[in-house]
Amino acid sequence: MLLTGHGFYTPDPGSEPFVGRPLPDFRLETFDGRTVTSASLRGKVVVLDFWATWCGWCKRLTADLERELGHRDDSRTVILGVNCRETDPEAAADYWLTSGWSFDAVWQGDELGRQLKTGHPAVVVVDARGIIRWHSNGWSASKAREAALLVDYLHGDLELTPQAVRHALDAGDGVRALFVIDLLIGGDPQAEASLCGLRIEALRLLRHPETERYVEQVQMRYPAALGETGPTD
Image (cartoon, rainbow, N blue to C red):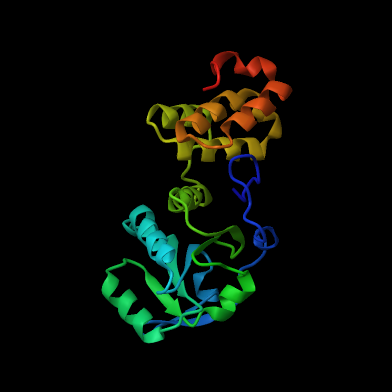
């Protein structure tokens, strides 16, 4: 994940230059004729969902974001669809306005997508100061969940303690556990020695393909830490 660039959450190719930089200025119209500007979003945590009607994975990611964030009654957060590189603007308007999504979408977002080098789909998360904190192209089963966790983190609503990791693991929530672990390690690299056992547990819970490679790294760096994790599968 781009907040830490550590381990499980690896940066998307080409996304690193954008994280930590201001969101480019823009002025776009929603499908129902209202104006949205980058300036009007300042003071909010913003989740930008880049999509087009020809992109099936885009529709899937939008649905995931709706599930994770759309139900929240939170004035601190704005979710905004950005239609770009669209082949049929009329169909795009009809699709969005009849979809029942709880958040707005703007159209003719090609220039913003070009400036941010977004793919289809893509998620960009911006903090309340207008600084890009995450830039991720493509779809994955956990992407919308990660975006929601990042929103919680930016609002200060995410508990960042080993106890919170333990609770997430006990609840079978490997995504949350790994997210918190990587934030803790990113804030204090020395913390990895005490957290790597929990990290391995989270990776195994998710059946992540990088699990055994990480175990090998831990065996070399912190061999004593594996005493509590048990043998590898």
